[in-house]
Length: 74
Image (spheres, helix red, strand yellow):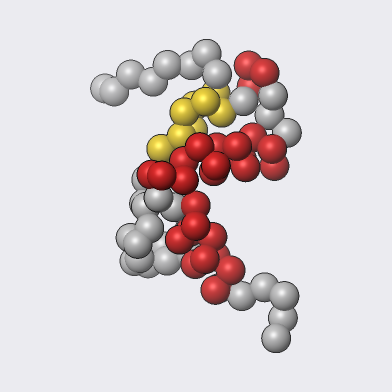
């Protein structure tokens, strides 16, 4: 078996794809992207939370806002 499979993506989505995991996902993204200070992600919204399984089965869509940016709905 190879080191990577679709199961990895599905498990990632299950672990990080819920509203309760937003703080951990935000910290993970900031760390992986090397974001610090005013460039860090402070707001994160999961657009297709688990167990929302459709054609985007293995994708986790997010909307992120950096520090100091305020989103206003249109």
